[in-house]
Length: 160
Image (cartoon, rainbow, N blue to C red; front, side, top):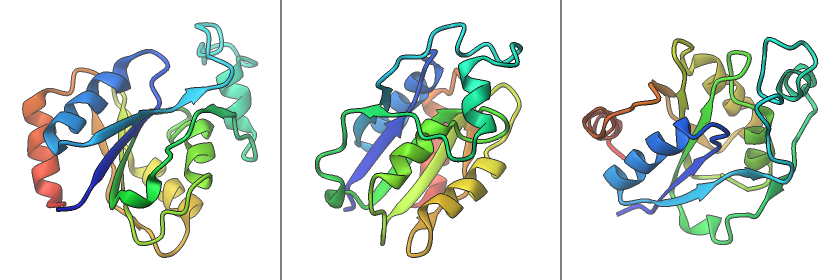
């Protein structure tokens, strides 16, 4: 049986709820991506042109610093990576995380929480960030209220 890790970034708490359901369904370990500089409500107000999240997403090279790390990444075969959707894709802090580890031979399963954006653009972008030798499964959008049943059906369909 493969070992599974659920990694998530959840500045408002929505993605954390879904990550907990996935971890429960997959009997997986969890790791929360915590920024060194926490995001404030103002940082996340995308209606303000120069809010932090908009500035980060406008700069393709931006890699916000993360506090902590996964000490035993080599042990995991499958890594679920969860995030809210910003600018139609994963936040730059997810790229910071993905670039910090060698995922060769592993499967990454993106999932996002969003009211309406899907995970397609994020899945493509993540594929480019991790490069060759990594399987990136088709991402899944789950509502902030991703139910246990919805999560179990999805993870069962993945067949991991």
